[in-house]
Image (cartoon, rainbow, N blue to C red):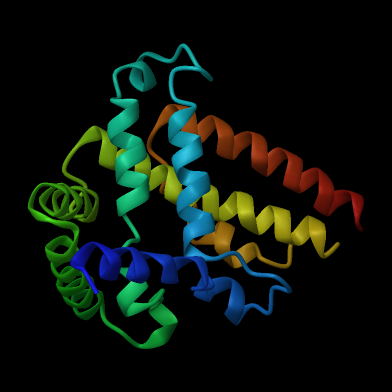
Length: 193
C-alpha cells in the first residue's frame, strides 16, 4: 500500500472515532472527531461573511480552515484522549507529536511538513489564527452540547462542558456567539422548570 493510501486510511479512522466526552456522558449518538473538525472548518469558512469585526477581518480565513482540519488529526492514531483517561498533558502531547510525525511522513514532504507545522502552531497557540481556532474548538463543543441537550430534551444535562470553557474565550466574535448560545440555552433550561 502506498504512503498516501496509508495516510488516507488512517485519517479515515476519524470518521469512526467518537468524541470521548460524549461517549462518557452517555450521549445517544455521539459525533465523531471528523464531525467536530468539519463543523469547525465551516465556522472558520464563515469568517468575513458573518461580521464586520476588525479583529476577525484581520485573520487569514484559509489558514484558520487548515488549522481546524489539522488540529485533531493525531487522534486517528492516539484516539480522543481526555483528562479522565489518566493521561498527563505532557504524555498526551508526546503521543500526538509522534502521531503527527508519522502522518506527516506518510503525507509526503511538502504536505506533511505543512500538516505538522499547522498542528504545532495550534498546539502552541503561536498565532492569532491559532488562538481563534482554539476558541472555535471550544465553541463548537458547547454548541454540540447544547444540541445534545435539546435533542434528548434534557436541558442543563451537559453543564460541565459549559463550565469547562467559562472565561476561556478570547476572540470578540466567538464571545458574541457564546453569549448568544448561553442566552438561548438558559431560556431552554428556565422553560423546562
